[in-house]
Amino acid sequence: MLDSNGNTDKKSIINSGYGHGGDIYKFKEEMLDFSANINPLGMPQTAKNSIIAAIDKFDAYPDYSSRKLRDALSKFYSYPADKIVCGNGAADLIFRICLCFRPENALVLSPTFSEYEEAVRISGGNVTYFPLKEEDNFDVNSEIVREISDDIDMVFLCSPNNPTGRAVDLRIIEDVLEKLSKTGSLLVVDHCFIHFMEDEDSYSAMRLLKKWDNLIVLNAFTKIYSMAGIRLGYAFCSTREMATSVQNTLQPWSVSSVAQAAGEGAINVEFIKKTKKYISENRKYLSDELEKLGIKVFPSQCNYLLLKCRSDLADLMEREGILIRRCGNFRGLTDSFFRIAVKSYEDNQRLVETIKKVI
Image (tube, rainbow, N blue to C red):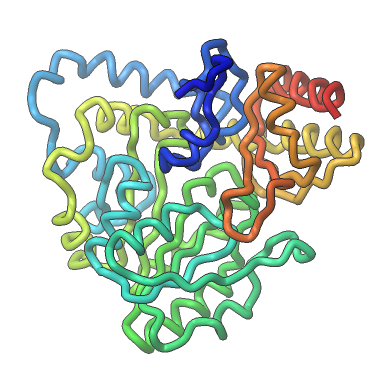
């Protein structure tokens, strides 16, 4: 909606229920979008080729269980295909997991991705928050284990966490699993940004799936393969029974034929390696340059940075044609926090110069 001056009515945006980045559609002019954390290298050409090759098959219903895609994921991750569930993005799977297991009391980080809380509440549960401390760079520490009371039946850990960019130590994840196993409770680890990490293997919870039967690990094609508009996520379940239960909560065709074809073509270890190097170099440049401007930049391990700056920074940047993510709607953060994606050197340079201009 527009106000009397023809500008976007901010109140209508708040009331719309949408509280994420990437809302480029509300602007008449083209905006440089730093508010969504998408791989700046774009969608792999192999994914585009796969879509084109399958285009004549799109008149048929999609495979309701994404068999070929699950087989491709199984081969790439060395994990059984019958323990993998595909969905309409990771967000879809978060809601499906909550609808499937109906947690009465869930523990989530603060701040973190808001869809965990929303999914728990929509499925009828209550939420307890584990506050992360600014002075600790919002790292998750071992205190979280002590905060898991016997009535907590589900825990969500985002690693690397959104919007902080900080990954959770595997020893802490395993301690959480052990605590939850005593009450038959479930841990959901969201790894949607883990492929951007240089030291991904040191933080991956995938290795814990064979040891524990109360774990689900989420991932998606959205960020790493720059496929946000296609909507494709996947979940690794520690048991076949768990995977079947989650699958049965999905509507029959939750993953389109286009998404399945794109996913099969996108999976590429060399592309991920190239991305890690690209992000690492450009993240350092962004962080160093912003700190020179007196902006508080929190250390990140993936493809975005959390900043602390003057509270009107996003408004000032929008006037210059650049979107950044306001973080005031993250529980535990204020209007002085912002998240920016790591993009190409040229785009990052424009961001720095624009911030220098407006502050």
